[in-house]
Length: 224
Image (tube, rainbow, N blue to C red; front, side, top):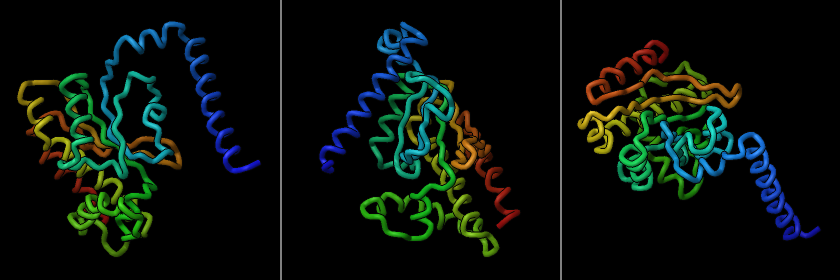
């Protein structure tokens, strides 16, 4: 079997998987696709990592149409990233989501590359954002933490910083100013157990941000 033939068969398998999935959805609810095509009205925007091991809908057990998703390497929210900002604006202003969830994950290879300085290519420039987090919060890494513990901590701190970045966009500021009900959350996902953890940076208005950030960082002081 040639490599080209193998690739064709692999792609055909994806189409077969799709047919089986569509049939299973109809078997469960024969109006599923009709309702899905009619509208999308998610209450959640998920900003997560592109890592293939972190499928947003599946880990929170939500169906298509129930979760609006934006993903990139290391779940970064950069104020210069029009892609992410456009998704955020559409979710807030058009879909009127009630929750924005920034979710990182332990074992993130992007975070690891940023922490260790390992070159991966063009993405090195993107991961500068995560390196900035590492430098900003260098006091929380100490000399007693293992490399794994430092990696886990940077995954968490990166989520917290990205939550702050979301809250500081004009999109959220304008939404809160007009009284829109939207809350931003910071979570982290464990690859080893499949469980989500809340990092306790839930922000429901502009006045809550700085206080919540201070409280979130206190627990790192004790173990630095």
